[in-house]
Length: 275
Image (cartoon, rainbow, N blue to C red; front, side):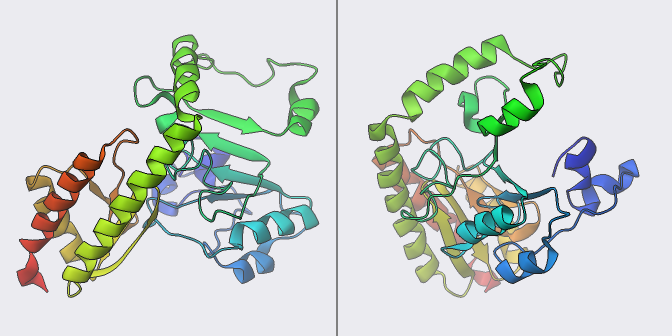
């Protein structure tokens, strides 16, 4: 969802209804469904906007090849491909970009725009960005760089923090650490799911971004509260409340992963009577 203008119009009705904000010709399609995109894309479409891993929709993982096909269709119809990596970018999946090897090692897609935020300053200072290919820069900003600015944009302090973060998070050893911790975390969550198969429907994720989907909304929400009581802060996904989203810090250590898994397991164990 967005909060202003076209970004708000492109989001779910629940986010825009109270603002009486509707712009015609925005279409929502099924995530991960190439056929749905084929039916709706044409030479008259301006852009396709997607999250690499839709977090609030339930930490969904598209099939391998999906984003490559989205790229191909966008190129075929001269449509801009806009990717939201606010949650998945900058190392969260164990790759710098989820769209470029973070979902599937050999699938590396380059969009026209990438939107970033959240981890961009490691949570220290509010900052976000919209990065784009050079041809967009030349077409829009070359003659007048100040044509599209805001009063609070261009945060000096935020940029300093982000530059330091980039120096750290772009290093191979840092990304390898996230991959290793992600494997450990994912394996542990799978074991918890297997031990609680009457409650848990599926576990899915990449790197240090995972979702636990329970078999009902009731179970999911009780699980969230029970796990919080065990000391692990997490939440259910905004548009899929039977799924909990788990995003440990990228600097998490092995013993901390083991402790987190232990507490998640204990939290779920305490609601077994709901099965």
